[in-house]
Image 1 (spheres, protein in one colour):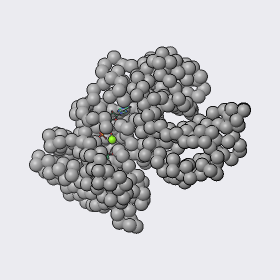
Image 2 (image 1 turned 180 degrees about the horizontal axis):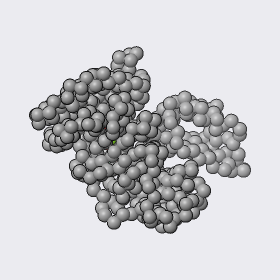
Image 3 (image 1 turned 120 degrees about the vertical axis):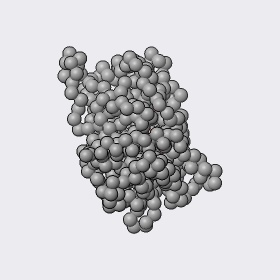
Length: 428
Ligand code: ADP
Ligand code: ASP
Ligand code: MG
């Protein structure tokens, strides 16, 4: 008998029919003799709809109230799923994050899990009942307020619970067959990866592949939780995220051992770019600028500083950050314009980021050349570049991002023969 944690994403429980379909799957796993804990997301796009609703009431909803509002989404799906499972003759009980013992810090909207105390979940499984847990939420011990874990947070609830319960596996059920070499919604010829290491998956998730939330992969790696990403619409084996790399195939034996091994192409539309125009090129300016931005609470991703024009001694500095952090960062910079003496600020939210991920990038200059060549052939302009040992990222116009992803995916020979299936969801 195994202990399985299953997580079903929003598109898998978007209406009554889907909930009944998921209930059947859960009941089958239970009837096969397993102990089953289920983590569930809010129905369909209901989290986005709740956010839209709050914005119609006020442009700046208080964060505490926002979290209370958003936790309602997962409470609806958890109770409906428990009802549907009971209706199939299998005992099931639903629990909020708080009832399930998911303890977080006090950061509303992007709280971190600090402890998992699943006392009631253990009792429930012991009594032969399926435990259904609302994903994406927890409680802060000090304030006793409910918190949410950030978008996609149900993945993290699932892996954290799997770690806390020492489950045999954490199954993430979604609307595609697993982790692909690129988002199958954009690249139909993307191929499913059978196995991927935590490190590779961390990089894919950090670069925008939202099939798994970044923090759930970090949790999985820290506690060695095997994560199986698969479709709730098919019986196909999905992608296993583990410590062990895939065994090398016979094909790759021809490959020189030092050749870069490409994992995939990820993309991200959620960033924006700020350019600080006419910055005096003197020591300490960059330090001051990024001190100010850091205090505003913004997370910075790529930074580019141009060579200063000799005649003026002025330079431009651009950086990317999550679009949502833009307003605070801009306000903080405006406040020190006189002190730093820069000319002006530009904000651009129409940017997209493409990242090519794989091992051995930095030592293979041919990789960047091939990537830039693919973008040139597709007529796509590169605005920023950053590289690391396992990643090359470029910023492009947002409306050419899909073409860029397809071009780079093909250029690195990642296209497969068959078309990837997207079973449901809106991609929102
Ligand atoms: P859920 O509602 O199940 O949590 P998400 O929408 O959060 O689902 O994540 C699944 C989606 O992630 C897929 O529908 C797909 O569009 C997107 N995605 C992005 N990159 C990848 C990738 N490399 N492999 C698979 N899916 C990806
Ligand atoms: N419902 C939340 C969201 O849409 C959490 C999740 O789906 O994982 O982000
Ligand atoms: Mg998700």
